[in-house]
Image (tube, rainbow, N blue to C red; front, side):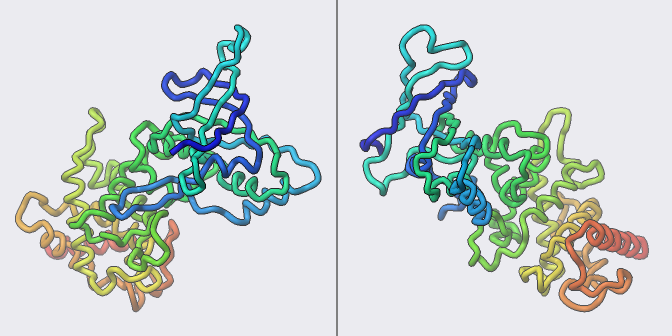
Length: 377
């Protein structure tokens, strides 16, 4: 893909990772988008996850641009790029080029032969800044760049998540990226990694009642059947996986750090398929028309799952029918698309995705379920 002119810059090679070279160098503002592209998060035709960057924030870009085009500019905010393996570094001659922490020299970045070919680098951090730099009138403003050499998308995603631990990323972007990262992550992300993988399974598994229904960061705006926010399911499954009282917690072996993923898959699909078949009139509608598809419904029914599935034998005859019978105990009390939750003193559409409403609704459903089971016995 190379064959065009290359860009050469004075650079420091930082002695940090034994296998991934790291360079610090400068580019002119108008060179940033010539060298680097933005890996937007999306899905290909085979539903494989592509990229990792969120959509551009035009207001943020405009604010940076106004500063860059002002009278006096100091712009120490650097960019982080993933560089291709085709870059070449030549150390400066003489013993003083290396001080044991860094080596000075010249970095050469090969460029594509035509504009139709992909740019050689990807922006890992600083996409709003890079967009503003591409538009500024200060075309030759020097910009600090830290570039690490890897074409491994997993490593790029890992670094993207790490550099964004302070400034929070959109939750749906994080939940979609987490299943694709196979290395140890900060604790704020690692607790969500397994539930995020389950949500990915629910959105793609042909046996799942949520097939194609989960709205993710990469979901096209015109995909109308994607009515369930992925973060609602991540939260619901995360509570069950990480709480000792959760039904999914039973299938985690903390001493060996292993997971019975096959049973968890069966349990989750069995339960939510039974929910779909118990409330067919409320399933698959936009959350504005069905509170079952709303965050408050998903999270509340997620908590009920811990109680219901404790009474379902997954290895017995017809687990789906068992779950349906359990859910029938609370079916007539639910008002997902019309009517009023009398005991809650709320119309169906007044339920909101707030901690108070989630706890209130979940508590009501679990109390009604326990009462009905007690009366049946």
